[in-house]
Image (cartoon, rainbow, N blue to C red):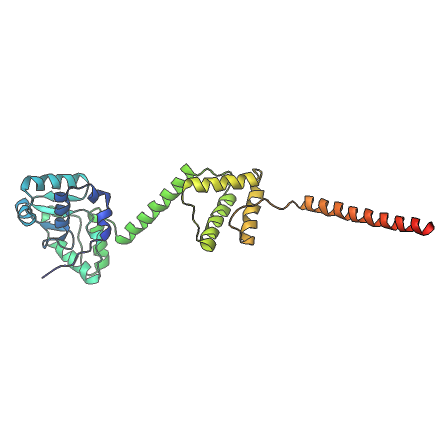
Length: 266
């Protein structure tokens, strides 16, 4: 009876796989897909059988297994293959978890821990204990760890590469608000650290290196639907300008009135 095992297409972009020679790639794929592979990724297989089914000579098989063990991927002990973290890459329903528990209970003593007892009465709990026993983590935890590592890398990149003119939490939150606005309104994203840094320098210059002003400039651009930054309007200058203009008009009117009066007197 054929078996189904999950292999992500991303395996070919995995750095571990990319660095392997063609024969070692074949060997690794064979280890996770051959008909002996069970629910736990722990099964009996000799080097002779591996060589026969893959066409790779025994010496290469032995070297490959040592390489995989050094990378923390595979162990081969007493003719048993142990695929490290194999279970975390599989999708298990309740019945499959029960089958995995059966497989574990039928393993030789040498491959089991004396303190670990798992039962099918609570398959979810029993399966989780299996994962923990083999130094594995559940798929949900793996996805969370990957997401967390990704966020840490992004934050690390920002802290190490981008130099903010102001380091307060308020400014940083407004800057990320600006980036989100640009993305949603214009489908724009800074293509590199350099381009983002240039935008920050421009903002710093237009704000005269004043944080409250910089934040106001951000708000001004967002409220007006602008793509870039512009200096704030100087209300005092506008007021002065209006006063000067008004005075100038008043002088002209007075001059006209005086001229008319003189002409009338004559």
